[in-house]
Length: 91
Image (tube, rainbow, N blue to C red; front, side):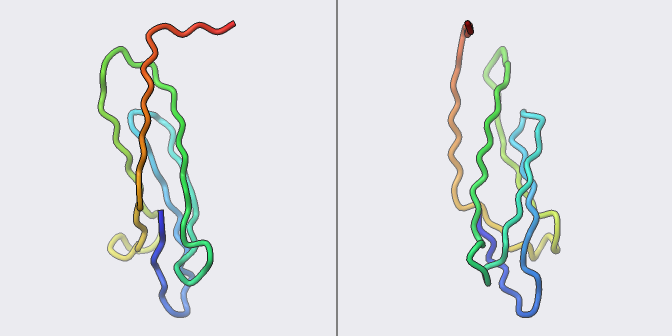
């Protein structure tokens, strides 16, 4: 993710929330503005779900602060890996 907010004389950081459904957890991160060296961030989500059938997944991220039309936060890339396991035993 990147935050391109670069408004003069303002605190350009953003608090971001993301949720990968159908997982119930919500993830949070802070990204500083484009006027700093910390205007990008990586979010890694690992979820183990017990599903009996194929299902859709979706990722939703939004800024918790700033106006919704002025967040200036963008998802640069997404990679989702899924692993199907029929019978898993541990010892």
